[in-house]
Amino acid sequence: MILAGDIGGTKTLIGLFDVETRRPRSVDVREFGTTAFTSLPAIIDEFESQQPGGRLNITAAAFGVAGPVINQSAEMTNVDWKVDAAELAARLGISRVRLLNDLEAMAHGVRVLESHELLTLQPGQQRIDGNMALIAAGTGLGEAMLHYVEGRYLPVASEGGHSDFAARTDRDLELVRFLRNRFGRAELEHVLSGPGLVNLSDFTHQDGRCQALAHLNEAGPDAPAEVTRAALSKECPKCVEALDLFVAAYGAAAGNLALTAVTTAGVFIGGGIAPRIVPALQNGTFIEAFNDKGPMRPLLEGIPVQVILNPQSGLLGAAVYADSL
Image (cartoon, rainbow, N blue to C red; front, side, top):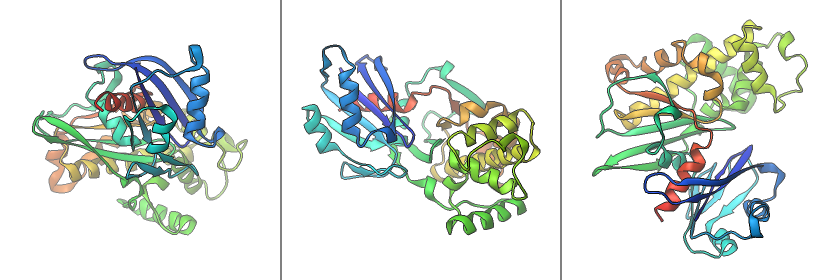
């Protein structure tokens, strides 16, 4: 039995998996509010208390963490936590324990996803000997690359979500100024995340909130979902513009990542937001921004682009990695 975790800024998934030949089989998965606990070991304690017999019988464990992992230790980006593999190994009583970046973990799961867990935005022409990449907007923004080396894909972690936001239009330039005034700089995560969608809504509603958002607390936890709802229902033109800006920026960032890694085997769109805004992703704005790279357009048009629909793909990837330890 292996233990896997997907440790995010908002929620944490912990799961037990049986080892199968291709894809670890989920035995028990539980969700916890990350900030409701003081540490990852505290969540593991709670998970263990919910198991029959109150004891974990595992041989290996891996945890995807939302933040850079250095020397098997990580300080999470959006939560005041430090996670350490040695501490977890001592807590679990096993030596085969590893931390990896959350998007790196998700990347390990890409190769075992089934067709029904993916939604195609652009079919392209996949080269099986090409690289892949993954970009995922949720509480934050993550990126990872999968380099094809000697017949297998090697996931590579990244903190590209904190790179600079690149303006493509005059409206984007106005957005950059707005973000710089608010944060001192404009980074991708300020746009492509749940809080980023709120930033975009604030930008488009500078002359006052619309009726659809009037009931919300300032940047409360329900704000991204309400902006999305008002945009998809066409209830508010300014919410529609906020979501349009989000989708165009998402497509452009995915295209930039595709160029960086020459991802002729495909680009995957993960995270919690994409499955909730599928109609907006399918209206052409995302793919046009993805492909709009001047002389590189033919290359981009040939790259498959798919949305990951499995909400536990990061946890699955951590289990795949734990199985390899």
